[in-house]
Image (tube, rainbow, N blue to C red; front, side):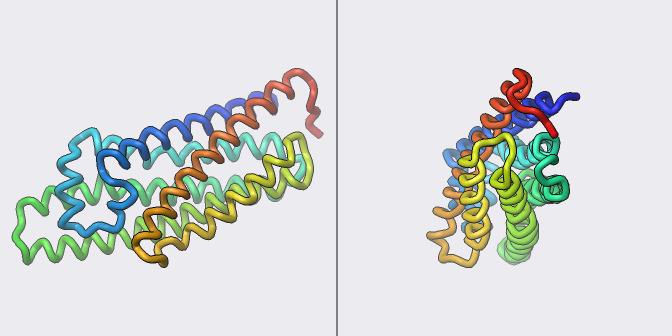
Length: 239
């Protein structure tokens, strides 16, 4: 398969990821007060989760599977950019797998573990609910903070950083793509520490992180699709 075909496929996967992210995050923000709900206690979250029904659960599932687009994106980047940094593109491919698994596992707690806990919450008394609330906090700490953020989001930021570094080193892509990717990746690294900020700042930084991610996905997809077209026209030559 030609490099242009891989690049085009990676671009479309990136745009698909951006579309799924916009749809799911938009719905969760409107119907579930995301991302503010991430700071709410179990007594408020569980009833709201169940009241959302199957549609809310499905949107959390869409949100959780959307990170898997990072892998075909990394394959496209490896194919297009390996002449300019073979080892770096291989490392980027590895971090794309970590990013997709980490962020997906972090989000999957909502339509699975939290959904089951919410159903049990309705049938228990105050003493049992204290135990469920502790489990809720523990699951959020493990899957949300440590797996979803410190593994998933940091791996994503490193993946974006490596792609930006290769682009700035040279190759067929415009340098502004590399500079913007560099800035976004560094901001994502900083915002991954948002859990150490006051509760009010967490909601704002999570919102900004989502905006940056969607912008980067759209930019990545557009650049790679344009690259594929120019490659097919013979305006680029792979080394």
